[in-house]
Image 1 (cartoon, rainbow, N blue to C red):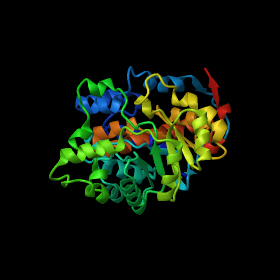
Image 2: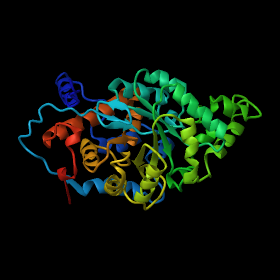
Image 3: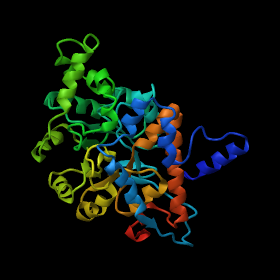
Image 4: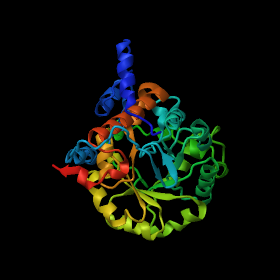
Length: 387
């Protein structure tokens, strides 16, 4: 039987009857303001901040407002099945946890807490190369839960191969290669406080536990962390590769490969030509190019061009159940959720992440039913109207 995510609403009301309210808001659009009250300023702005003026971050949200759902009545939507399969990964709803690094600056349980919460709900977690927790430890926390791995591409081929091998051996089934962050954008929120957590060794667990990377160091990271930090930062930043570099990934990864950061339809076509299995239409949540196109505005054209040949996923700006529905109706096979679950982590560790995820899934489930839809396969552009 399909999961009835909307029942989380009933659970909350029943607990309220007994005098217990949620530990923090169920309104995903208020999570950022709420998180600002429980996080230290520097980590908060590292998560919430954007490139330049923040125009791209704002554009992502404004794009959702330009599309309106047109509900249908008497469709028999009492029972709903939100499940799907993406690149061989079954999931109870078309939602994945986006790769977000450096989670130790948010909560001491970091990626372990996130993995446990996602696994408990059956949602895939995408582990960032910039994780504060090792590949193996996150896999252990995830247990039988589905998991993918995100790559920031080291310029040392042997180090890269070692990391990919560890991910594969640890049960990560798909590789997500982030293309748009080969160097950090101009981020005033971090620059004004001079805050870069990597310089203190945060978000470097994947590298510091890698045997090949460690072999490149004159001294072990435990004895000389600054040198290890600088070596790793130099290895994964400052190099913008070309399309002819992609065969290396095929040589070292035998599962699905997804390119994240695609915004132009011609890049999506080149991904197909390069034999990739999917793309994530994403502008990194507005963190890389100020004044860039909103991801949702880029989505329909990319779906029309390549959606019949590779999986098209969506990222950047998802906050509510209605957002999920709109992205799926515009052709995305699934969406990646980013900042909101990190704010949940800040509020309450694993429980906080679970609350945010259950809230989103309940909102999506109820929005599906109330707009007259029983399965995600029923969603199409006809569900929406452009404002």
